[in-house]
Image 1: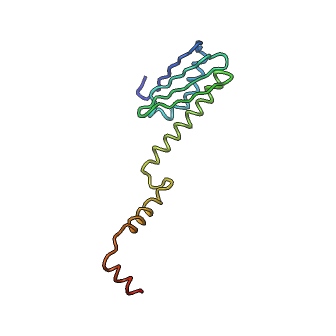
Image 2: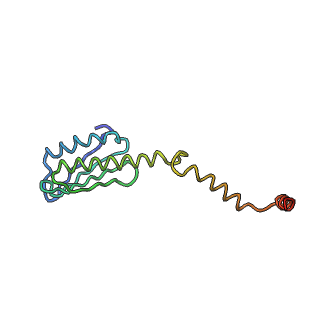
Image 3: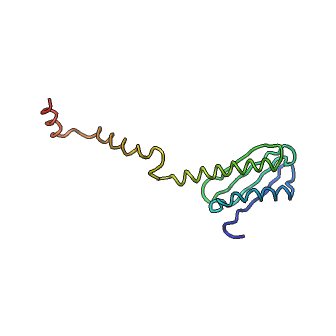
Length: 138
């Protein structure tokens, strides 16, 4: 395996995850190859894999805490499809947060310097020239 390969581990609780189920999950996880630069390993933990499975995907990243998605469905394949969608959404959101970090174009960033300047102006001490200007205006 190369450095960019994502390791997929299958764990079954109270039931065995069949080869066919593993192939289906691995096929669906090809959608996550876009995020291979950040993903290291994915754990698929299935509880009662054949009847109303509760499946949990744990995505271990190169940096930071792992991302966890968990759901219960009518079949293993339907639950995997749903969890892949959820995991892609979490990875996209995390990428957007990282991408927008320290970016002046992000929401609310334009207002901060103006507030800071206004606050600095309010906190500024009144000089002798300011006092003279005020007295001449009155």
